[in-house]
Image 1 (cartoon, helix red, strand yellow):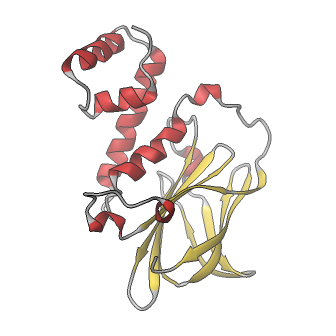
Image 2 (cartoon, one colour):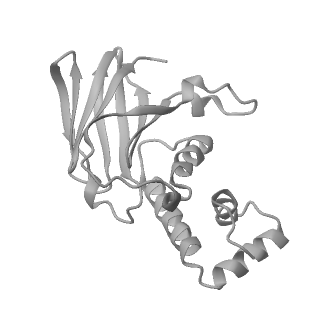
Image 3 (cartoon, one colour):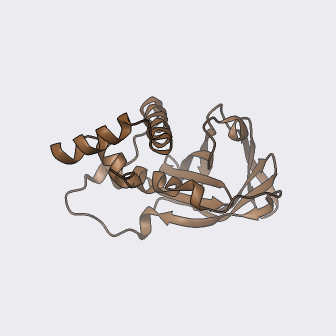
Length: 207
């Protein structure tokens, strides 16, 4: 059997395949296929990280959308120069996604955003708090890295106009949380080893 695609491998690991199809994928993994085993190990690490997150569990469709940016990483061109002063591009916004019948209302309370800049992705969640404020919860990842050395201990700063209003440092897995951000329009700046990334026009609001 040739290598299963990334989505089929994820479905296998989530026990979503039929018995015959699951048996074929299992047999293929037993051959020691290095790319498939690496993808399996990466997904298992992602599941462990999300399971340990006590802030809030993301809806399954957001999680699957996020992990798909890592599909076939070897087919994408690699950055060989400094990222410089990069502007992140929005690739997913839960507010732009049509509501799905049967989805629990609790799963759509928080706004989910996914940005990309070069090899970096920034997964953000805006959770409404009290008094016209929201908590900004996120994680920074760098594609193609099995560990988190390049995304841990990064300085992040939220500015309104040119005025810094919040700052923090990412944890050992690239995660961060900034609590009590007043509703408004901000820029999020992240200092990485090979430059800086700016998430422009971040609207912090109830919806």
